[in-house]
Length: 392
Ligand SMILES: *Cc1c(COP(=O)(O)O)cnc(C)c1O
Image (cartoon, rainbow, N blue to C red; front, side):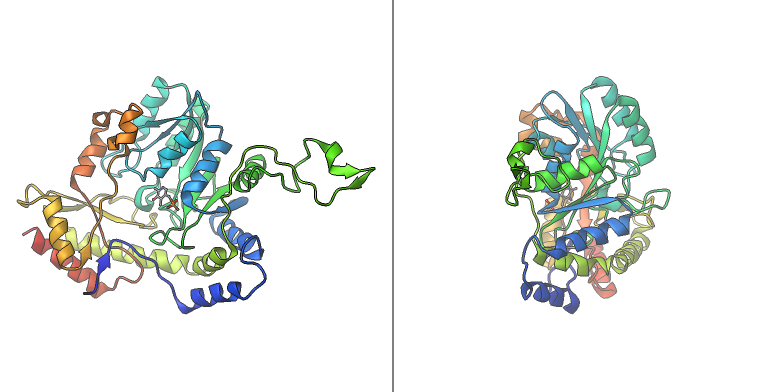
């Protein structure tokens, strides 16, 4: 059976050749491909600095630390996200907090942010998630962050190739201190596993470089104990300093070779995703049961997912039964996401799931339909037909 899942990578012969070339080169890691990949992404999004890392989650962890999240302060994000966004706050020793989403975008609600900022002066970081690639209202969020003395770390795991309302690329950090991307195979481009942080702030950039590699200083950093760096005025060529506690969050050259090759195709990937999203929109335009979860910003979004709201009750079924029937016919839909505030770990930390009615209303009806570059029009038509059939 030809399985159609909600998302998957596109890999062509050029990608394969790029990886093979790297395997035949001198450096499998810490070679030239990492910097090339960083430059390719920085140029694409228009950011001054880029730091490629082993995963989007590693990037969020480092970004939380570099933004100053720690004991006594908090990071505010959306309940409709992957758990990694708020886990970053917990890794850093800070408190994760949530603000409800808006019904029409499924993005964090500026009004809900404003309320949380008033209640929680300890909020140090706001982490908007561009859900499914649809950019959040960054203008409004930036104004609130500035007013509250908070900084912004964008979770743009869904949004490489997206554009803000003003037309500029997500990741240029005009609204934020840092933006974090993911290159898991279902995302806009892939490196197998991988992530990347962009920033325009040099000090933050240097901090990220240290955090990525054990907290060890880089050439541009000044020594904390300069007397150990030389012998009778001659520099000690082996000398380096571990200046803070860092991690091994490096990405390999093999992965970045794939990333460089994938970046060349990003625009084609996004336009195919956008065309598929518009075909779905047209197919469901007259449906009472199936409504696209987001309708605004169709030409701004990189369309990582195609989330719909389905009135399962009106169709006389449940989501569990519906997904089971789809699966029997080779179609694997998914739910993005279970509200993070529903997770037992977060409930033990004090989250009250009922405080997020819009997130819960969305979750009750959510389903992500297949959306990926290699999905053909014919396959998409069969997905639409199958879904309508299963819903009666
Ligand atoms: C995929 C994803 C992440 C984590 O990225 P990884 O590369 O899988 O670690 C974080 N946040 C969101 C919203 C994601 O979709």
